Length: 169
Image (cartoon, rainbow, N blue to C red):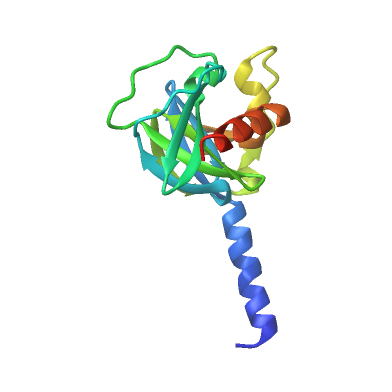
């Protein structure tokens, strides 16, 4: 294969990844995050609580030797806590080289969302979710709230959670 063909294929794959999203449900709302940020999806497991973690940070898990802070999306969005069930999952993401797990009510699907289908999020006053949204997309008969996981916590919050989790490695 020639160098130009290989670069062309990499560009196509990169473009496909940019428009591919993992969709999940939390509190009966459908959210989407870029699949490129998802490391893996795992079923619920025992979460070790950490003293003085914020209420939305449920604790940490050990995933193949890697200590990962776990954030409950429902709680972070100021929604009432709901007991975990067999559909509850942890979406493990890579944020600036650190793994973070996000507890979601259930995973929906991996789907293509063309950039042209995404509109800016509406201004909803002080709605907590609006701070984390980068857009809204219509797929088939569903609305997907496109979320930026990097905005889900402030830089200092991410740094603090990552540092606290490292203490347990």
